Length: 333
Image (cartoon, rainbow, N blue to C red; front, side, top):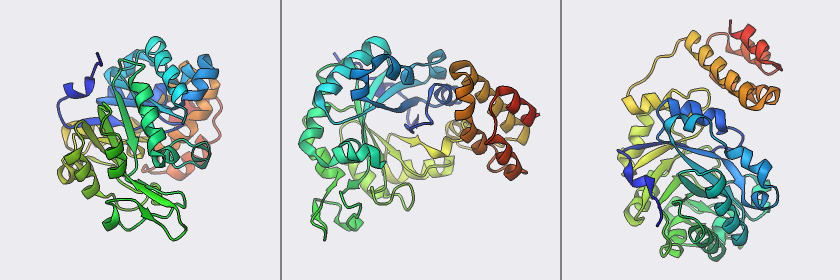
């Protein structure tokens, strides 16, 4: 029997959305400690798990139970047989709370491999991938999507998001309603909907109406995602869509305390000292878990932590050059 943790939360559910190169072990722990209900891993290749399992499993290891948050591993790929093997391995070795399949990644390398948003367009193959996961694990399966995708990157007007629309280039646009109609026989427990088209990327208006319609037709948990950077925007997303929760992506970068804000429904004032203290805490954990390589990965996080602080420009210039934990310690002091 499938274990379904999604139904056990008080609502709204607050999730750390998956972000490649960002939602690693350290960041998931900090966000979990700050109040995130669910944290997602970085995207993990199902194929890489099959051929190089030990190295790939490192991406999914947790630290101190992810700070108390439920943990979902997100997979990408396009071969059902690889997904079948991957979910078995993940359940046995990692023991997360759930597994998610990516159908929205716009990165060219991923799309060219037939995964992410490219897989979203192939409804029959997408169905086989989800089915392979459900049939080979007792963990709940969820998915993450955009609201529509087409090969040319040009999407139809929002008023036409009710069905497939051939573009001028002859490419077929697939929208989320078609996708869910094809998958309706599958036991998908949750869906995180990024409320933008593929062509919009990470900019532009979020289509709350589409997410609202998804909530009306989808039987499982619906998480609204896209552009949420504070508790007021989270409230708006939930009120306008009726979603069961929100997924926070870029809004958490350099601000893991955003989850405290969302839980308390108020802005949390963070001083420069407190922001730098959190940044150093993050850096120490990166050093502990990844060594000096973790410190180099930490550079981008350090820049996010100081983004809105006085003297940010000067600090960023120094942070992008750090090599050791001691370098960071000197700077934050």
